[in-house]
Amino acid sequence: RPRVLSGIQPTAGSFHLGNYLGAVRNWVALQETHDAFYMVVDLHAITVPQDPAELRANTRLAAAQLLAAGLDPEHCTLFVQSHVPEHAQLAWVMNCLTGFGEASRMTQFKDKSAKQGADRTTVGLFTYPVLQVADILLYQADAVPVGEDQRQHVELTRDLAERFNGRYDKGGTATFTVPKPYIVRETAKIYDLQDPTVKMSKSASSPKGLVNLLDEPKTSAKKFRSAVTDTDTVIRFDEAAKPGVSNLLTIYATLTGTAIPALEERYEGKGYGALKTDLAEAFVEWVTPFRERTQAYLDDPETLDAVLASGADKARTVAAETLATVYERMGFVPAK
Ligand code: AQP
Image (tube, rainbow, N blue to C red; front, side, top):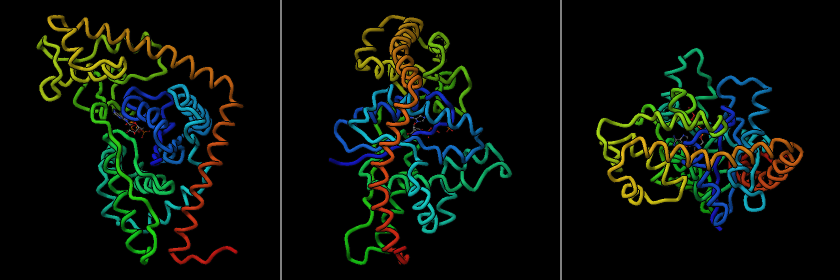
């Protein structure tokens, strides 16, 4: 089976709809066809300041949401990044292979650091993509299921894997599998409901444009009903001319498993109000059991922690083997 690896941050508490539709939903599908490794990336979370109690609670909350979304520990390896120390160890090695200019070109870093200002931006935020490189390469992943915003980081991973392989393999077998991004075009970028030209994001979206899965469903339904569209009245998928309507159609189609042309037909001659109300209802119908399942996992922390412990064991076996090969090839003297 080909292998996939991906991660999600535990920073905001609730996942938002972009996280779910752009990434987590695909993780659930891929666990049936791939050898799947998924993690809650708490080491990434501390690139910005975290309250310790909140980080601890949000890490378990993220795991609970992943299980509620449909990840099955019998079909995938679910773990917490900091439980596997090899991530930080390989990240250091990869930092030493990454050009300063190369890291400086990462657009996500440029955007976030510009917003935070130089004094509040940490070196950790700067090297975050390199930690991500290590995350992926440790597991020899063939594919990385992510949203469009992560494409550049997967490209960096490919470059560094090839660089390492070229420099250290010396005619032997390649140390690293060179991974490909796995991005589902239709849901690669879910947009802010109030500004459908920017991605839905926990840090950049206005509260009214951001749909958090764990918010009161009534609150989210209202956000759908007041989503920004356009002054036209035709319900048609056209991302360039009608970004708001297209975003709503994408969300509706994906949540309900309906093709977009079928929705266009269903809403022919109807106004935007009907689409928004129906989408709000469909969302509430989907999210209500999701919230209940999340709560059930949270109510049983022992089981949750046991799932994560067993995931970490499985992950460490793979990660340790890769790291040992890397250390050996780089010329580190073995510890024994
Ligand atoms: N709007 C989105 N559309 C599609 N996919 C998205 N992802 C995030 N936003 C969208 C995907 O979700 C996965 C987990 O991402 P993360 O844990 O790194 O979260 P994030 O990218 O930090 O989420 P935000 O909201 O975008 O955070 P900020 O505001 O901090 O930048 C990834 O696969 C991501 O592509």
